[in-house]
Image 1: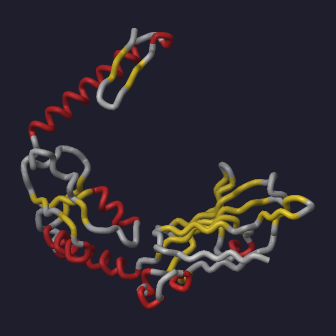
Image 2: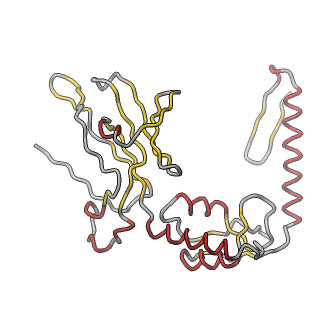
Length: 253
């Protein structure tokens, strides 16, 4: 009898585990319907790493269950898939069965025949950073929000346990001016210093003038694109043929 083992090289933000519920023998495929006791919190992956356990801090190696995909039925080639997911804001579980969505208790999940499991990395250390940032926001409520930070990075900050270094490279254009777009958000200087201290990266971007050259180019493109859409919409359905490339739009009539 062969035994297959796996080692984890790098801890992911979201861990996806697929249970081997479908097997095959000389009589054909069959399903394992046994209920498995799933750890809801504190799943520690340090013991499954291919390096020393001591190299990983405990608070960055634990995972919390956030979703379960379940297969209902007795055969691999038939049945119905449903999903259980945790609302991380309200900490409530919901059952998704096609268009029917119902709230369920955590006790009900203990009897679910899990097929695919999703775990999210716990962020004990980052929660302290968030709490400190909230305090700084309240203390600096009268200070101007004259620092810019990438909105994409802020989404990573609130979504991931380890968002990586701050990357503000997309905030400025090739003329070293501020881009007139919604790719950034404003924060106060104390909040910037706090984030910079914990995550490093940059560059630091303070109140500056918008780039008039890039703004004009962007406005011209938007005007041309909207004109194209209105022109195509006015054509009969049979004559609407659009050839599009990454930089140009051509209307064939």
